Length: 150
Image: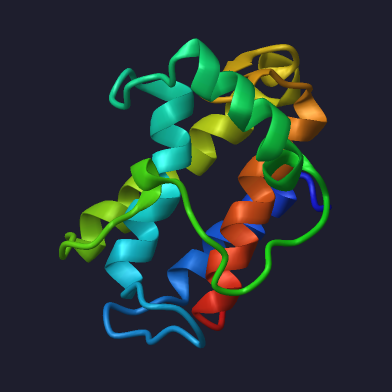
């Protein structure tokens, strides 16, 4: 797994994002490019903002038991995988704003560095290691950027 906390890798991901256009079509799936960018921003909203309700104790337990390893492990996501309800984006979004937000989140994440995230509580899975945070951040972005051919 590439290291999203490494400046070189962050820049490589940003370069991939910059290859997108407002009319870029997906190779699979139903999201438009603006929806995909907004969808990718949800991960960072959960890490940095108090925008999404946290799951209750039982739901968090179930997420840790059945979903966590898929999200934070190093095995790539399958095409057309199901997504959590908080990540569903069905309305039209502002492409320019979503792209800028995602880029800003990436820069912020890289500057904070891996040690900032080591042992940090995640929104849905409890405390994660820096490797788990990296896998969650990088794998999700790589999956969706590949979905749009960049």
